[in-house]
Length: 309
Image 1: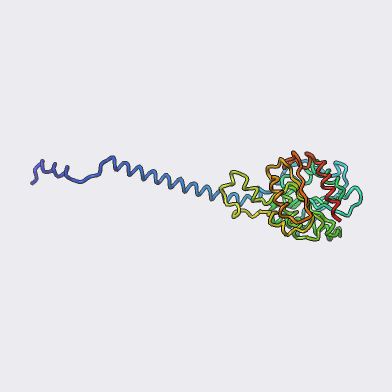
Image 2: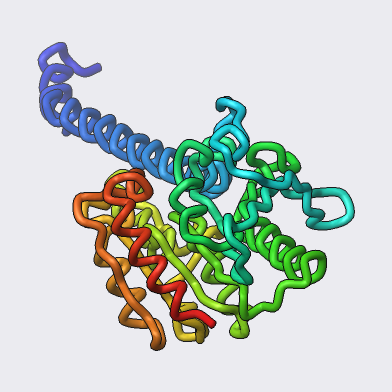
């Protein structure tokens, strides 16, 4: 039998790991798990944000107002016809046909911005556009105003634009050469698309135009981390279409516009074919270009329209 002293020697001679070293390894293991969990959480949040952008981009591009004051051109003394133009078998777009004060063959087919409906244009851009002396056809996209409900997107807006053009050509029997497409802000997308599809048309007017909606999104800081080119299906790539537009072009932008800055208008002008012109509205921004300094803009637009025969 081993003595008590032998047992003690056996115990103290056994190999062992210091307690401090065990604690370090356990701490490193916990920290590693924390870092891994945090990274997984970031990936989940990033993927969820990408999914949100992809699913909500139509609503982001077309924030149609739900409440607005009811108004018509008659409220400001301008005669008009109230129209509902069919898009397909079950849907329609609300539109106003506004004849020129003095007989004119020319028609401005107007595509408005994304933040308002026709009724809100009555106290805004209607008067200066009517003052140009041409007929007007103004439309609301589906999902806006009294047009059929639904969420607009690039494809549907183009369908609305084609329906409006078809109405002018078939119902009104207006020659394509007398139709001038006018787009403001997001409306420059369908206006440019129609100009590309109809080289026989009279002209193209772009007010507060952009190169593409992706280029606009890239200027928004909180969208920088996202692969916008991959996620976006509303591109409105006006710049790439300029090569296919072969009708006279007039581009106007406010010098204080930070959403669709003059640099975008310059890029469009550089790509466009002749005849073309650019007007910089001094001091105007994206939202007030049709009121701030609008008298000079009217002069420039009138001169442009005189060149279209």
